[in-house]
Length: 78
Image 1 (tube, rainbow, N blue to C red):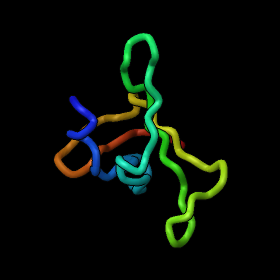
Image 2 (image 1 turned 120 degrees about the vertical axis):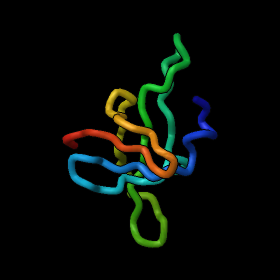
Image 3 (image 1 turned 30 degrees about the vertical axis):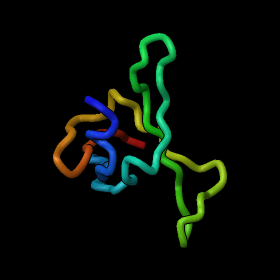
Image 4 (image 1 turned 180 degrees about the vertical axis):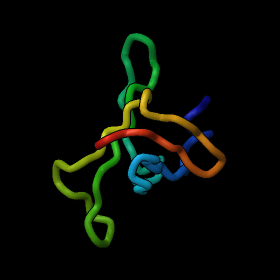
């Protein structure tokens, strides 16, 4: 799967039903030896789209349960 195939999808936590962000507004953490994605790092935003300082959500690849046509569903207790 390529990044362009999952970019723009909404990320939803199925445990809380909470929308976490849209992939594309994220940074990726990539394993330097294998080149695999380890996690998505989603910054938290205030009103008017300004980033909050030092606040972010990290979604580990292992937390992803389903990648659908419009959204990525994860399972996390955070």
